[in-house]
Length: 130
Ligand code: HEC
Image (tube, rainbow, N blue to C red; front, top):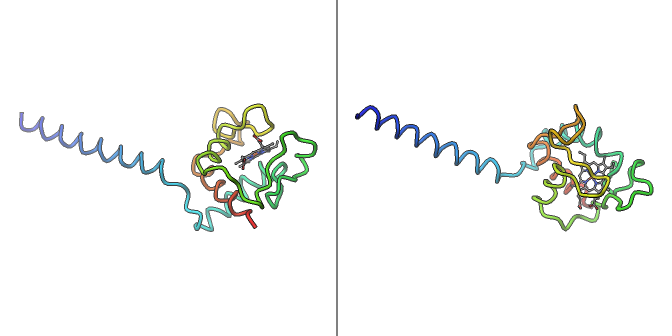
């Protein structure tokens, strides 16, 4: 009986720890000061998948954006959207526009953006602001 109680306590403690880890994990955005992470995602994801529309300067004038309506926004002027909204659009896309989602199951195979990468992409968006 005593033993059973102890293992229940341990199980409860593990559950609490896991829940705390999960919620903080979700709430914490990327560390935008982590230059290595930002550089890696810039090279591995932004240049490969985003630049053709959003442009190398983030002004929305990439070669692939010609004549697009709505056009990609000009991030050099900043963005009014919250980080959560930016993250959401990166993962899910923006309905009825050329901005398709990049999460697994939505993006083309091999082009999927991970949750960590999406958070770092939000840092990159802000980084274009002049
Ligand atoms: C085929 C062109 C295209 C590609 C490729 C593309 N986007 Fe977009 N993106 C757009 C367009 C167009 C919009 C504007 C959508 C709207 O007005 O709702 C947009 C909007 C966004 C927004 C919302 C910005 C804001 O301030 O309103 C984010 C964030 C974003 N894109 C990130 C990305 C990232 C990150 C990638 C690469 C992983 C990417 N996009 C690739 C065309 C593209």
